[in-house]
Length: 340
Image (cartoon, rainbow, N blue to C red; front, side):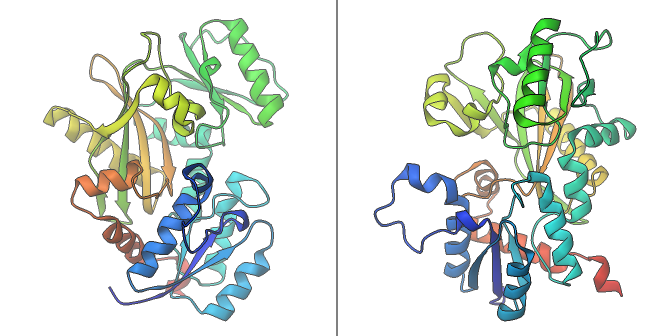
């Protein structure tokens, strides 16, 4: 593709170094995605400039004026320390008539609010575990319509923040305790949904209007005890926990009929939530073969070697090609300002 001026928008504290010399794996973990993207874009011949922002929109505006980027590669996941504020930063980019990669503001807003997303999926008859929400300041009442065990998680946090083994509850006492924990510790409303025992799948999707579904990825616990195991924050981010439980993620072995059902389902979710650019859909499949959508994650982790990139590579899309496709999707996205 044509060489571009690219503003790589990221958190101020995650601006990566130009070299990994003398950097340990542990030190690199926080900004690995940022390093991989910046260095790969430069390797591809683009003029990639990291721009850090955390609480000041003027830095973004000044960078747009100075750099005159063809596109902003958006890696920013929060603003003012609030995860859901990334949608407002993307809205600001649109107000500046600045093309960007990844999801549009509406898709970010709908998918970040897990309660709203599940209501939309329910309206479209997309199977999702039965659920309710306990707002902050409200007490838990008897949930006769939901069957134990139940999974309790934040309505708005991502990356499994706040999810521990205690998030899977089997009685009302444990439910009250976990809801109170979310209300008080994360200061978040609590989403309570029925736990679906079975296989857990992650499915990458690329596209705006025409969608490309990547190979279905599966998380396995090869050393875990027979009790239900969930993707807690430690399972996702702690190497010692991953080793202890034998956490593996790789291409799922599925019959053709089930694979096609999952692909169709992921496309329906993507369109129902008005997603664009790229996203990951999380699902569970029970022993009877019924598939449930857990949530949709716009702008998922793009680190080299992580699930999204690994899934793409399995489909013959090398990392450089993956970033190139994401750039092209951002450049071709029809934001409203383009039609004025």
